[in-house]
Image (cartoon, rainbow, N blue to C red; front, side, top):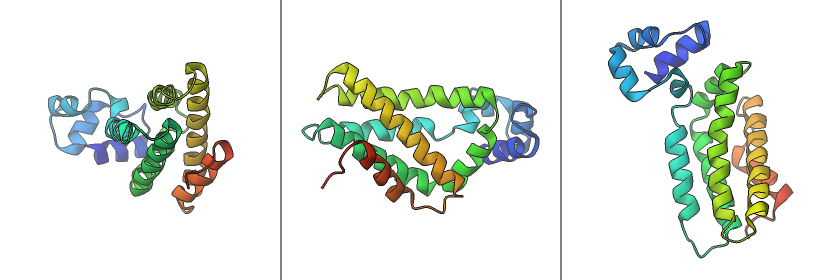
Length: 173
């Protein structure tokens, strides 16, 4: 279903594609499609919920470690997952690019990552500082992923992410 939707969105555009067309192209009923993907936007970001859940698990791992260390580790785990799904992310970026509704949806989804980081960081710092640091790390991560995608995923993402993180906080030893 995801592949069928991706091909339609790339071929004729997100707005011009319908859920009926996606269902037909995927060889499933409309009801089946909606069971797995309640909206067309969900087809553009199919890995979001799993990645966010994995991210939250990583944030909670080793609660005795400093919060910033757990956030750094979780972000690096996320970029490793992104690198493994590079082809899908390249296609997703192409679909999202220039579509105001999808750009807004992406920002809304990104706010969930930022909130998860802020909650974790607030365990070791003032809540305002935690939100500011989470916002900075979220923006840094978005910029890192954009740079990586713009390179056609030819840059080593983990190394780029580690370098980007070092601009804000010292890396773990």
